[in-house]
Length: 171
Picture 1 (tube, helix red, strand yellow):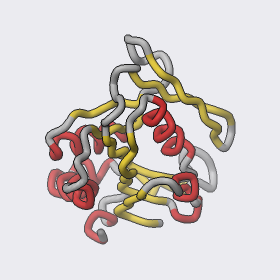
Picture 2: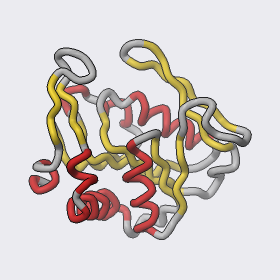
Picture 3: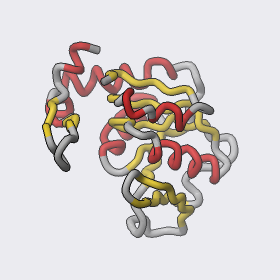
């Protein structure tokens, strides 16, 4: 994973002072590193009969759709409110400074679906936990959660104790 880590750029004091932002732009710019990241994300789940990959807006769309492509299955977008044109199921959750919501089409998943949740980064785990709850609200099963980057010091994994969590790079 050191090869991948070399393609994560640190941006100090973004989006506010004291935050060390982990920028994935150099990684997704490199075809070889993007391919490596996607392969490493899905590798543990190749024999798990995954039926769909779900990803959170926005960077989860990058890795999630590529993971779905590699697995030969569909991609389910978990969107911010007001972005989906059909009937939706909504899940609200708390953030460090406020709250947020995610939505999914009500017919995107159902009983019998086995879902791999993919995102670029897990920090406090609130968005990932809400995503798992939203997927399960539709009757599907979350098989695992996969992230390119995990900020271990924020203990986001503790929000996902009911799920297998796979992260490529740890800070």
